[in-house]
Image 1 (cartoon, helix red, strand yellow):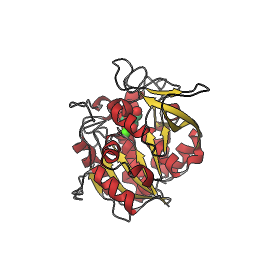
Image 2: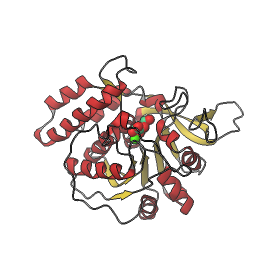
Image 3: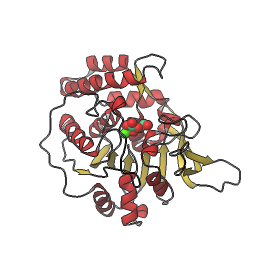
Image 4: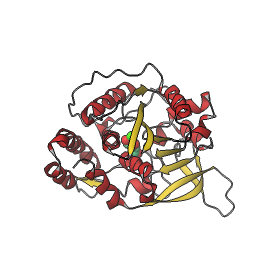
Length: 314
Ligand code: BDR
Ligand code: CA
């Protein structure tokens, strides 16, 4: 089994990714850390706790709350038009009585990087602020973490917040650049592959019929929350009820990297620019001089990814 910490700004696709990770027999979720992004960090934490209760894993999953704002800016903007006012498509899910750890996300990541040296996989599904804080505190963490899988960025495709920037990077470009330049082994699961990995309403309807009683509530939640998500994506996905599974794909890649093709590229994040902040620029020149070496996902077996995701809930 792969030992993972999931760092999430728990919105609709984060929630699905968390449920999947908790259901997959080949993943052990060592903890979930939360960050602002789709919604504020308090709601991200609350949604995370609700998801853990909904999945009811056979082991305890500690939750540590992290950054409420990016490294530089004081007023983050949230994406409630994409994820709903509560972050999970305005679907009501019972509250959990699980207590949040009395430890900040960055400290939790640092502690686990010692406990699970060379084994710990970090999967980030939101802005990179928590990992940036951890690296600032103790740069040695970059040698102890086995690998980081980042949902974020776009190399050869358009952005989704600005013409060139993807939301997670755009929400904290300084944190992303700090992490990319830190030397931590990192794979970028960006819009280049996530926008090709679509889940449809029809697939969710079929899943609801196929799933056993034990997973019925979970699948019902996934279906309901995705209604909101599909509405947002309707125009961009040719008016078909479908949406990219950005965050689940990142967990799937961390679980089994063979579902994607990667290419090592030097990548730099643009920080100071009104037009291009949050852009992930790859220096693909023969003599590449700008940026830090990052594995960028360039191709994906999308149908295998979606099949695996759905299969976990049958
Ligand atoms: C990413 O931004 C967030 O809205 C999603 O949860 C995903 O992590 C996609 O750009
Ligand atoms: Ca996310």
